[in-house]
Amino acid sequence: MAHYLILAATSGIGAATACLAHAQGHRVFLTGRRTDALEALAGELGAPSLALDLTDFDAVDAAFAQAS
Image (cartoon, rainbow, N blue to C red; front, side, top):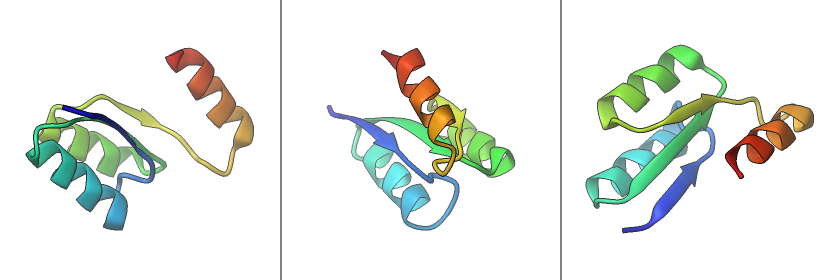
């Protein structure tokens, strides 16, 4: 089992990657800007999530500092 940090997990390729990795038995941690979609997918997969705007570099730094 691998651990995946999925960026932009709220739609498109990010959501598809999260679902595929989860279906294959991997652990996923989801991030995205759209909290409604993020919470819905996190609930569906039973995965932890963090609302995060990747264009906000200070927020990204804070998120990684909190995770480590």
